[in-house]
Amino acid sequence: MSSPRVLKLADQIKVIVAEMLERRVKDPRLGFITVTDVRLTGDSREASVFYTVLGSDEDRAGTAAALRSATGLIRSQVGKQLGLRFAPTLAFFEDAVPETARQIDDLLAQAKAGDAEVAERAAGASYAVDPDPYKRADDETEDED
Image (tube, rainbow, N blue to C red; front, side, top):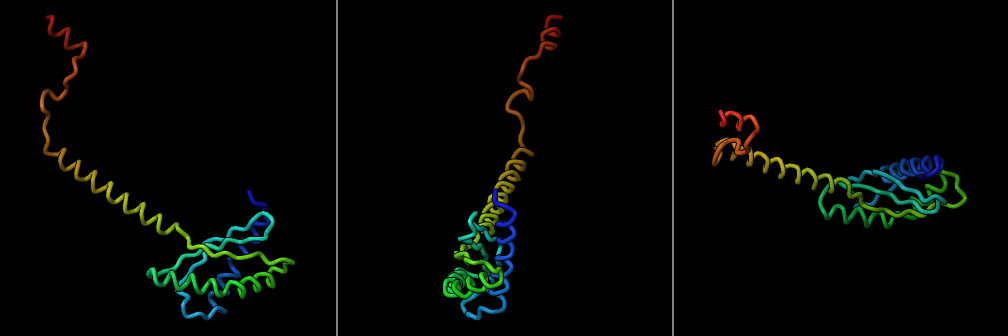
């Protein structure tokens, strides 16, 4: 569990990085990017910045290259705005959550289609033998009478 100070710094870094990408970084390779999360180590020396990019694989690759080239500028601005003696190193990672959510949605759709197919088959089905093949105690008493 991170300290409240580290969590607050991570939130501030997220805002600073997002503003930098929107206003100061003018790289044409930079796509439609959203900063989703920042995780900071306990000693505030390293920050992992997670982002998503709307677009194709080519857009994602271009954005990753643009972020690598702008890391120094963004890091210096983070250090200035936070007033830290040591600006944390920044590492950018593409957030896997949207892709994972898409895969889960696809799996749920497959399961729903499979359930519908089973229900459709069951609707017209009939029992091979008695609907209830198990003997019950009350059945035995009726047979004895």
